[in-house]
Length: 415
Ligand SMILES: [Zn+2]
Image (cartoon, rainbow, N blue to C red; front, side):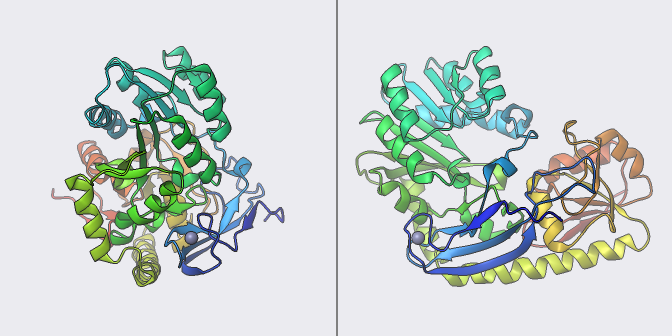
């Protein structure tokens, strides 16, 4: 193991500076979830993966900030590769635009990735500009007709945009706000950039679903914050943005797109309802998160026991070598002792090994061959229906262990 220190730990809340941080769940020392390796003997840096809640502003967050150079991944998730994301992008554009009254609006997206979402705005007559720090992806998006600045968005970049472009009517950020340490500069930059009557749209994996469905596998070093409506509103209100509406998103197994304006407006019925439900559920209370921590720990023990029982006969094949599955495997201590191979359709990941658990990643086709007479652990459980339908159609008849949501289930073949 490497002695190199790749992180520092906070003593104070990243949002409000309070030092009243209460422990929720300690997932132990883990390698950065995307550090897939070609050689299992390579040094593997580790960092604590511990979740805490701030008693003052109720923001749930990690204690460790890992140096982004260890998190930067060449296996970066490109939006267009996911069918769910492509379908959702159409819906997203129409939901945002129906809340705007101006013709031909100008739309800026923070962390715009390959431009999949902006392209839906462009085809509806909007002017668009993307901002994304991954240079190769920004260049590709620009070539494909979505002008994209290869920058990490912050207050300074917002000033640069204002100097060179018109003031945008929409500034949006999808699944990026919870991942960045410079969250204050981004929120401030978004607020200063958007036109007075314009909209800021922020999408995030909703803490309510994480807590209720036990998505402890969504905890990994890149994912610094786990926002409720209350905690994210608290952050954006510091910068003069007030939420008034929302719509739901299927991304990550359950996200919310929250819509802010510079003026306080009455809450629309959907958001009003969500806020009431959140208040009733006790989501912002430490007891909810303590219970989550206890249940996640029990879940991992149960999963390990079920998997070990299967592995007595034959090691299992797993499906899905994502950041999420890395957390689950490391926490449950499931490794190449129980799992022979993990299937992943992304060719960039194939022939590499999972971080900390050393399971070789193979293609879907190779996986089908290896699965003969064996059983499967479905790590990509949030794509359960799609994956099981494919496997059954391709003749797989073994048992499928589905770890989440909520509890471990075993799906047996009907034939
Ligand atoms: Zn706080």
